[in-house]
Length: 132
Image (cartoon, rainbow, N blue to C red):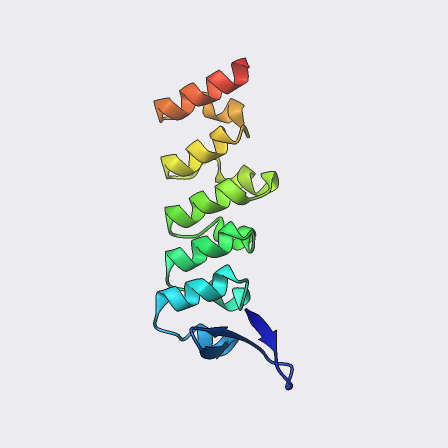
């Protein structure tokens, strides 16, 4: 859990070791960084983490969607698509990854766009949802 010490520098204690936002981003163990991100600690630093798992965790807690919606990893973008506000979805409708587009259609957004999707399952889903 993140705490504030007497010098007003935030830190988190994970498995008995204290980390500041500067030291957590340099921690070699991905799961330690993941634990910090899951607690909402040092998100401004960890949003740039090399681990897609850490970045997905940050997207799951609804932080940094503007930035993470352009992530190079499709799993991170899919997590954003699942948890973001509708305004973010507008620029994601042409995502190269079919699963990202599927999530957007499954959420019921931009269905008219997806009725002619190159992935027939997405197109069928959009047509079905529009018929309801």
